[in-house]
Length: 164
Image 1 (cartoon, rainbow, N blue to C red):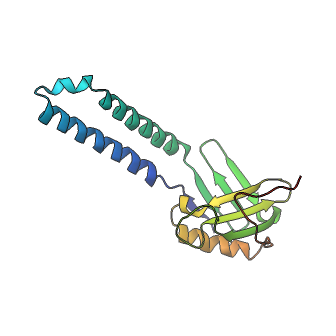
Image 2 (image 1 turned 180 degrees about the vertical axis):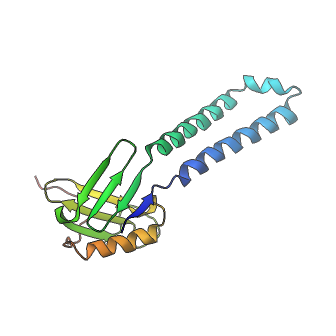
Image 3 (image 1 turned 180 degrees about the horizontal axis):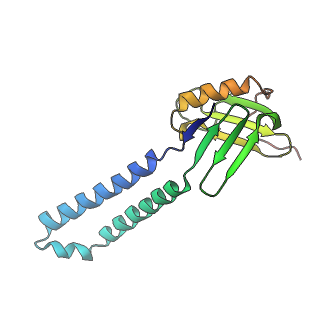
């Protein structure tokens, strides 16, 4: 069974829309109520700053749209998909898996982080559940996968002290 979870872009849409509305409101108020002529608003440096913020957020939205990030879960492997390529992780290669929460991140929900380590790789994989659509289904599917792989002892993610 193949299940696809798309990366959420809600934040980027909201950010772009808020900057656009703020720009239009400021331009409308400044141009119609304060100034006699509407073209005098182009001399206002605040408008240039607001246009810059809007353009940067629009570029960020477009770049993330083009990346087309997805998490694809199948019965025997996990696929991290992007426009440039895919990273396939077979369940047999997973050394341990932990489903829980991140201590330093203050978001609602008990299941906000899925962490697993691959046998031949030193670094761990982190999947932040809140960044994908249908996060409850994602957690349920990952719990079914976690039943088939070894569980890792509860680790402290975030700021860790390393031994010298």
